[in-house]
Image 1 (cartoon, helix red, strand yellow):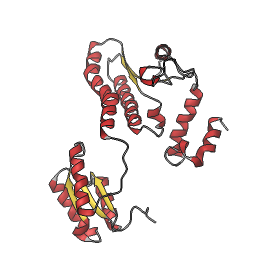
Image 2 (tube, one colour):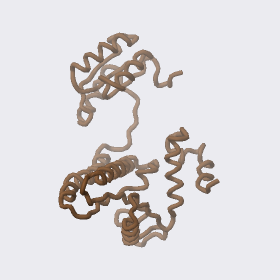
Image 3 (tube, one colour):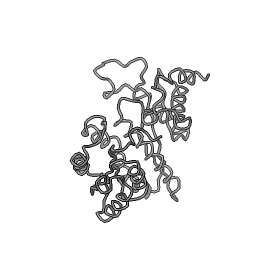
Image 4 (cartoon, rainbow, N blue to C red):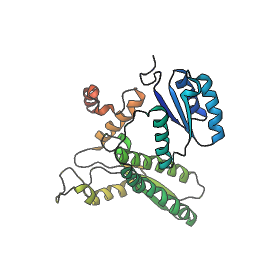
Length: 272
């Protein structure tokens, strides 16, 4: 049986819906009796897709709408929402905090690194000298705990970017530059102090973190996974293994924080 959300007269909004997987999904949803809005760029592509959908939709053209949208433009998505509400009454949704928060965090944590990479990396390669590009990721970009999705997304992006960068650098002839991903533990800084004047016992100092980073660079590590005074590397490894295991074992998303998996995770951490 289809998921309850995929029921007759429910509304599906599909971005990139004029072709490919998006259109295939739209066709399937229309066949289930859903009202379908496809959003994409290219009026003629949308018109062709709408014709196909109308022949499948149980309500014909009445159950199909198209909106020309560039989803990279926030204002276009706002107009899309308004159009769907006017025609079909809207969709059920949930958001994760103000857009401004997302924009600020992604602009600094991810786009800042992209900008620096594009500006500095080509010149560093051209100079023909040994060099390092050290990007600061986060354990949260790997295990993605609940609570701050914008930060998690930004740091997951840094991880993916730095991995791709290192692959490109090592396959560039004559390149003596290498990229590395610094993954700090709990570090006591102005940003993490939160009003405290004294370093918590479990935290490392910035100097300890840098010393560890330099030592691991000398050892050739790409992933510089830092422990702290509370969390040893072994615990970090088990947490990361469990996170990857959610996909492999087909567990619920973020099962580490799911009450049904609390006991199993505790045993996994202990190696049982």
